[in-house]
Length: 281
Ligand code: SAM
Image 1 (cartoon, protein in one colour):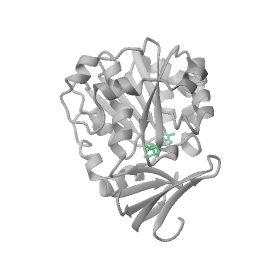
Image 2: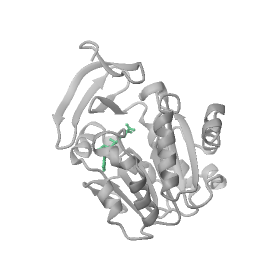
Image 3: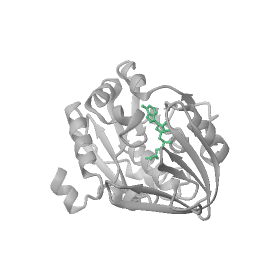
Image 4: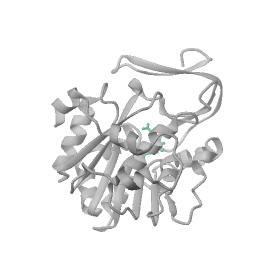
């Protein structure tokens, strides 16, 4: 907090801060895993903060949730079984369930309290939680993936907090190897991969760990997210098979509403900035 009218997330390692004007704090609690806060803001609706980091606001979460879901779902040839590791606010689950091909979507968040608070303060994100294809599990996603049988899932979306605390183990080769083992032949894992401006080290390590786990094909998508450090976020897909094409016609004729995602946005999100090409192409 800068003062009692602003919530501020200051990241000293990035040398930057982002602030939102708040009306009041609606809730705070220490869960078994993390410190959870909910604010009512002046212009962004409600805001969820976990361990001092901004997670979700009513106003701008659609960028993140749509871009964590639709690019990967329109890249897979026929996604039926989807797991979301983390994602406790349920926004990604809602987007995944918009795809008619999806027969089962399991959200595995370590912290049930995140979902219970989302139900109260972000009900619009939770409106598909009772879809018969949805299952909510409250256990460690690392263990869930480790214990899974081969060929048990088509897409794994890792919608986690940053690589510290309970999420640290979601960013390493051992976890990606477990993902590799339980994904189907055309399976894809996608993970939120931080800011390409601020966090190239994390991105490089993540891509290296994915490669070490056997994923020879990787593709990063870029999108705006003003709430997160630098305002420019990314998600990285990794697969055993080619990721350079997506189901463009299906994306163009999608049967559901989105706020940000469409075929042209998908195409544009794949374009690599020069510095990124130099690092990874
Ligand atoms: N959009 C957010 C971001 O990038 O900052 C992520 C939002 S979502 C609320 C993150 C979720 O990851 C939290 O609910 C947290 O409980 C969950 N999480 C962290 N570590 C986890 C683990 N090992 N297994 C399952 N869920 C985990």
